[in-house]
Length: 177
Image: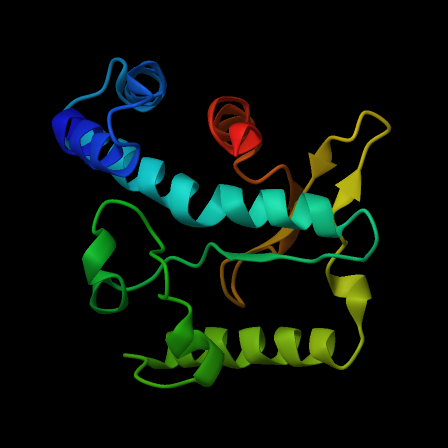
């Protein structure tokens, strides 16, 4: 896994930033092996391609607008999450829940109905169900996110989704763009 990640970043960064590549490898892979290395690799690419760019974009946009974000934390059945066996949920796994299609059983349909209702309320202007991103006096973004695990779980709003990882990426890579 480490070598796969190293090769990917070497090809993308044209071997120019080998010190950054090693910082990335050390940040995600120090002390992990086996399934944990797979989870680390998925986390690395998820943070680099999705989570952290979203946080950074929201950070800049939230200086002049209200910015909201959801994170689907629902425990997905394997058939909807087959690409990310060890890390749930995977990018795009929320699509069946948004449209209520291809769900394997009534509990997933019930969760989808509730998720559709929450999102519909939000789109109609009920922003009280989702706090916006918050910028501190030191220009640090505090992303709130909905931790939604279905109708039988406690719904909660949490703070700081992937903040540590995104601060790492911001300091070694995104700030330098």
